[in-house]
Image 1 (spheres, rainbow, N blue to C red):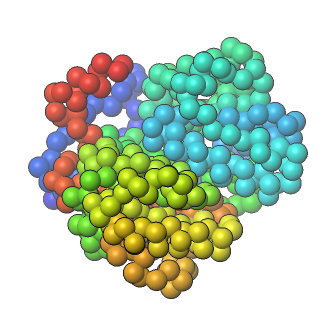
Image 2: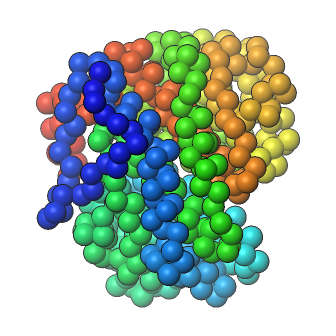
Image 3: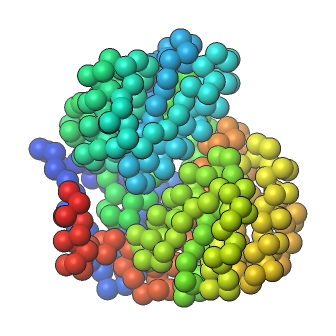
Length: 396
């Protein structure tokens, strides 16, 4: 056990700024990742409180988004790794807010771009928003610098305005608190919370903070359920994660988290894509996780998901699900023999916000339990092994 208190704020970036060092290594749980999951509801409350001022950075970025959307100019969100998944989530959150604000001419203008590709071909107008937890990701910073040089406005969501990325951008929205684990969970949730605040300013509607806090806290409560699923997935040959709509960023995040934390090869497929060519590579050694919490067009998504799970059942896949509580009874238990984690609905929150925040802590909890079941420490993402540390260094 440790004396970690999840209610207390986490430290921010060093001054002068530097990358965070490798997390201290622990022989077993609770890992740093375990503690970060427990801390996220409290971090979310502090971020929402910090960004509530309509004249502050979140309000300023909301204004820039609104101006670009109203003018029909591109709004591009970018990042790498987990931050790329948070960027994809931000696209869903901002798109809904633009619609809610009645800026119909700008709907569809928000897109995501991989940072390396964006740096090679930056836009000359509109708005580019970078997401980088520590603010030091080279590809993301090159994309922001390239966009600014080409003539676009720029913004950054990061923990520190003093980071390299924070100093490059015209508008920097700080999330302040830094993840203690290199298997980033806070690094995924924090920018989504910031995006939720920006969207609220844009659509001129308040965020129900208590509902956000409870959604994150509730998602991490079913430890027994996560452990049961992890036991079925731990010795799988590979893991597939499938999703549709606003659940797709969460599916991508689960895939990368499982690979980082437990070294189990994992990949994400769009729900429909999964059924067009990928089944021949699967068998009873394949794990499959469905994520379905998006309440938009849910009936259609659920019907297609039911067909996908039926196909998986024929082949004996180890199928589990992270799904909205309201559809639990509509999906027969035999379709998810490895188990399921249930997500509360949070009807006060916009649909993509409810889905993305609702699935965040369940997918993180499941990841952490898969790591335990496989006997791996999620915190160093295998860089405590000199070969993997050398490999990471070779890519810098």
